[in-house]
Image (cartoon, rainbow, N blue to C red):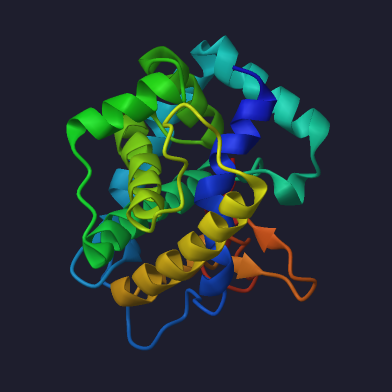
Length: 237
């Protein structure tokens, strides 16, 4: 599973952050103590995030395929276009954990149901099995315990595109360039709607989610926090 596949699969998840660029970490009111991120009715705690990062580090160091995926991606891309933050495992993990929540909300909003069989089809068809999926999510910065949730988010995107009639009738066929453009546009809108519905607020220690630069380039990771924020010095790899 080379870097071409690495970039291709991430693109579907990451391209949809563009319309959520106005969302920042500094919403009104105080965050609940111990939260890495809060949603409308739930949160991810700093303890849970730290546990995920610790587990990820142990697993990543033992997975040569995941390390190879990262090396190939970094050899072929500028750091700004990488689907993870090489300077901060915590920001990398948190970004993708948030994305999974957003796609779950998008499925709810769009009336799309993804079954375990749908997720299995993505794991087998797109990743070539669970072992490859595990290496893939480790390269992104997630522990393997989150691999199936990540695959489900991919299945949700496919389900949304399918419901809109944008996928080829032959499941084995790749979408045309025109279909791919329409899918990207649809997923951007759907992702933005779900993001705002969740009322996401990120602990300023981890930066903002997501970042759209003045040049219009999307950051696929949480942006770095303001150096003046309390606690920021403790962040990093």
